[in-house]
Length: 57
Image 1 (cartoon, helix red, strand yellow):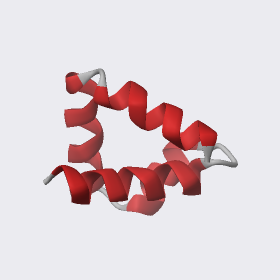
Image 2 (cartoon, rainbow, N blue to C red):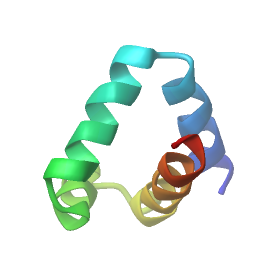
Image 3 (cartoon, helix red, strand yellow):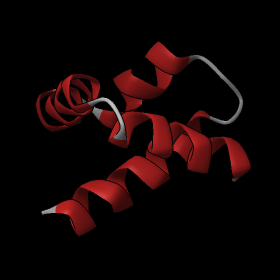
């Protein structure tokens, strides 16, 4: 959970990265994004990103 929180903080501080990630989440599948991350904490990060996207809108 700490890693997900840190990832979100870095994404929020980089608007270009945030735009690219949100676009990827919208146009691609979440499973594809998980495979792209290829890390054991990917599920936590993706869950945090989905929540971030919902609350940011």
